[in-house]
Amino acid sequence: MSRLLVTGAAGFLGSHLCDELLADGYEVIGMDNQVSGRTENLDDAFENDRFSFYDHDVTEFIHISGELDAVLHLASLASPVFYRDHPIKTLKVGALGTHKTLGLAKEKDATYLFTSTSEVYGDPEINPQPEEYRGNVDPYGPRSCYDESKRYGESLVRAYRDKHDLDVRVARIFNTYGPRMRLDDGRVIPNFAKQALTGRDLTVYGDGEQTRSFCYVSDMIRGLITLLESDVQSPVNIGNPDERTINELAESVLNIAGSESGLVHEELPPQDPQVRRPDISKAQRELGWSPQVPLGDGLKTSIEYFKTQL
Image 1 (cartoon, rainbow, N blue to C red):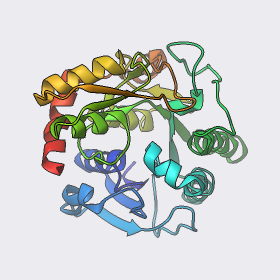
Image 2 (image 1 turned 90 degrees about the horizontal axis):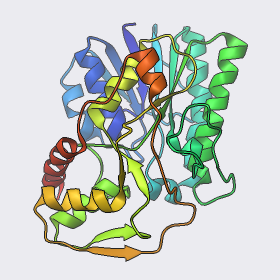
Image 3 (image 1 turned 90 degrees about the vertical axis):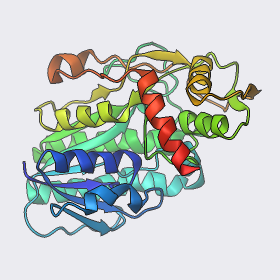
Image 4 (image 1 turned 180 degrees about the vertical axis):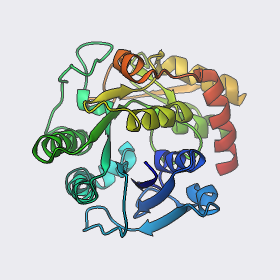
């Protein structure tokens, strides 16, 4: 592979992916309509003559001249703040955006990588979650615009694989964090970091004993590229199985930030998952991939970045 298209290129994950692909020697075309992405995330990429950028909405027809070896579809409103504010856009990028990018991959005879999510498992009844688990999801629930956009996207990828013999990859991404996350992202690590660094009490929803598993961005990006370069055409969990309670995460953020903030508890949002932990046996076995960055190290780097954003 040499020439790749990355949608959602100006976002948190997309920009890191562009940087790493460029470092690996690829020619990268980035595409983003900047609803939640920011072009400053691509400052380093713009310095590279193997990078080009299109300001374009992937739900509209996509034209790329020349050959493409792969299409990597990361465009999505993954933050709860953004998908609750833009539920129809979220559904359209998962449905129409996936359809348009799959059509492009078919036209170019390119490998197609779809970034799905651990949210396809919903509020899981088993822990950890293997790829075979079918999930516990409410298609009419408050999170459904995001959950169902990804579930539909996976189904569409499968249909193109079976009907058009398209070479596909599906990554089920678990909670990822790191530099370039927006402070108004709404997810727990930027929320806690912003509150700790500004001396406000950290907002913990429910009793704080619900769990999440946090994967540092460099591990996630390497996992995505390893999957792209493999021949695995069925979904693969990419995440860190180091499961922590939200209370444990809060204490870690406070310690690393050197903050004297306390905790304030608020009502748990409806259908907020109680547990989240990837079973990464398939990634370890078929990709030879495992995360390497401990939570404490990743939080230190992330909090230093968030300080620069305040």
